[in-house]
Image (cartoon, rainbow, N blue to C red; front, side, top):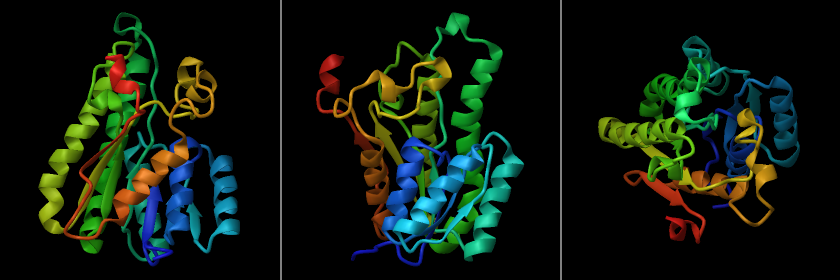
Length: 246
C-alpha cells in the first residue's frame, strides 16, 4: 500500500524540529492526518505548511508545553474534535541537560523529569481512551540510554529507563484492549538535542557519522504500520559500531 495510514489520525509531540518533525513528515507521507505539537508555534506553522504542500495530509497546529497536564489534555481533545478520533500518539518531546549530578540544580533536574517523564505520562494518559476506541498505537521515543548506562548524565538515563519500563508495562496493561505500545530506542541522532547544554548533536557529529532524524522517523512509521494483533514493543536503532564502545 502506498499510504498504509490513510484514514488515520496522529498526534506528535516535540514536532518543531528533529525527530518529531521528521516523524510528522513520515506519517503524513504514509497517509495520516495529524496534529503537530511543541512550544515553538512559528516552527510548527512552517512544518505544517511544508507537509500540506508535499502531501495530501490535513495538519493541525496546537502549541503545547508537555509539562502542563491541562495543555496536553487540550491537545488530544483538539485533535479528536478536529479529526473525529485518534489512532496514533507519538510521545517524542524530550531534552537533556548534561551536568554532573553533584552540580545539577533543582530547576535543571525538574526540567528534565518534567519533560521526559511527566510529559510522556500526560500524553499517554490523555491518549489511551481514544486509542482504545481505535485500537491504535502509542509510541514513546526512548534511547539507548534507557538500556545502557549513561555516565555523563545519569538523570537523563533514568528518565529513559523509566520510559522503557513504562512502555512495556503499559503494553501489558492496555494490550488486551487492542492498543499497541512501542518504545523506539536510538543511539546518537543529529538534531538540536543537547542545545540546553550548549552543544546540539547536529553540531557535534558530522553528517553520516550517526543516525539522522528521518531514520528514527522511519522506525516509528514502521512500528505504527503493524496491524493487530501484532506490535513492536521495543525497537533498538543502534549505530553499528556503538556496542563495541562498551
